[in-house]
Length: 267
Image (tube, rainbow, N blue to C red; front, side):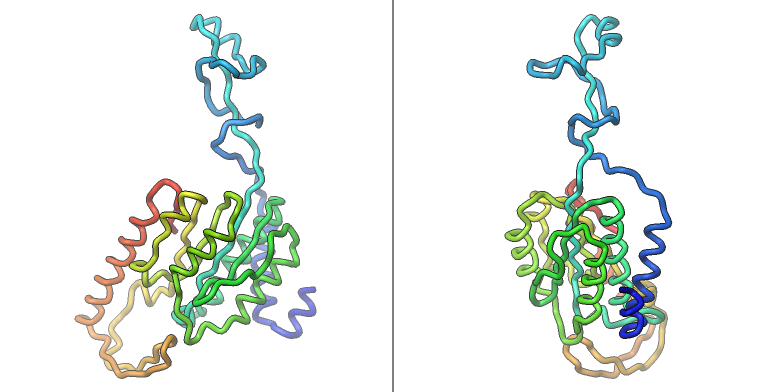
């Protein structure tokens, strides 16, 4: 299948080959959750309570302390993974690699990881609209489907509608899931993930170019806004970059604050 894709879209085929090789060349183990269950990995000891399975009583410890204690274990679980790339015009930028292509690689890595671990995943294209890219699946060819849909999606002129994105995912995701949000997150002020984080576990992955993180003075330059298509001459001097860095730091601090409620991870 990748040979056919290679003939029609060499760039996409190389991304999939790279990510598939990287994922399947590494050893990974089973997932364990922090919930108590019938798994095999020891979690903790606690005093026996009415209704506990007597098969889990640790008789040695119980005899030493004079009270019955039971062993608790991690339960093995199958993960429900949701991949939600946030596709906006700002991804059409990169000094060595377009941010959109890097985002595509990350999505493919997550999807290939699910396939390898025998976990199901589903994916949604999130922009000024939200639509299903791949239904819940464990099939490796659906990774290619997801990659093709991201690659084919024209981000120019697109702006994120965070309210619609969060509402759509909240209503569509019926099972508790790990939701991966991947984007550049330059507009964290309008992002409200509190309701979704109560229902699911969220992982926020920031994709940016190094120049956006640490820009250097370039003097007078002409830039084009990929969202509006408008061009302007601006001065990227030390004073302008100082203001830019201050705004970026404030934006990222606000984003990190929103993802530190115990059910979100921030990368």
